[in-house]
Image (cartoon, rainbow, N blue to C red; front, side):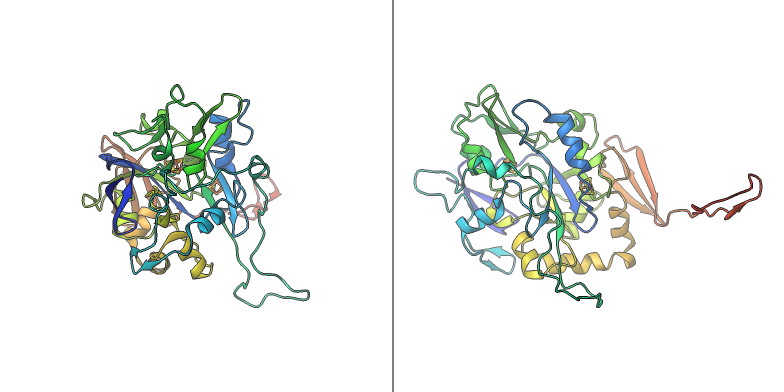
Length: 375
Ligand code: SF4
Ligand code: SF4
């Protein structure tokens, strides 16, 4: 085991390999407050990458309803149970990660889901926490809650899948941190499936090798955001690159939102893989549930998010979500507009703070008709 630094845990931790943080790391931000569970992302990904034989159960992207939705069944509950209670002292994680808690002779603490755990991806969808009694009526703030959690491979800085592979078939690209499986080396031992705490690597029973989200790297190499990001109906997603810790730039939208404003947080940071999909936590969920899921930064992130209407720079960064297919390397606020630039520093998106409003007459004299959609 080597000592590597995990900034999510605010401490060094043990990892089977030496740290080799890429010069820039692919990263995503998902705003949980905006997801409507339309599953457009899921379908876009499925039709692009996993519509073949043996891939029926494979969802590189899925959207599950928390607290009762899971894919595969009970994945996070199972890992939490293995890992035990989470111990944080302010921003520092004092419990064990999946690497530090590995049983003797193994590199990662994990479990292999059963086949039937993959059988019902939508089980628990739209199921609320709490119950609505007969005769209940609306009384203001909802007492019941749920939220949608969109999930893809986190292209972790310290991947559990990579650590566990006895064939060294999984690698992390130094140019952008995308985690890939070399299927010519894979022998289908499924150690990766067991080790990934997010269960985002899948075994294909037809090809008899493992496969996972490839970060749409052919698009990334052309400066385009991945399919799941570009097609998102709710505009909840932004993909870009995160700089190395200590090298963050305030004009990089990912650095700004994740490291500087700390509005977007990693999913289950306590697992220790330093995942690179960051979530703006839901505002209406019990804080203890959110903290277990997104770590100790939840309250501060929610306060920052609630302040967006009075924070034009933050609003600028958030307005970039879903408004361009291009990867943004720089952004700035220009008065009441958010402006984004690509890798050649060309302006590729400009979003006004307030959308222009047009209203047509209810009665159209020229065509002698009434309109029902006047705005
Ligand atoms: S989320 Fe899982 S499959 Fe993806 S890099 Fe991390 S450990 Fe590997
Ligand atoms: S496309 Fe966007 S809004 Fe629809 S389910 Fe996926 S993440 Fe949520």
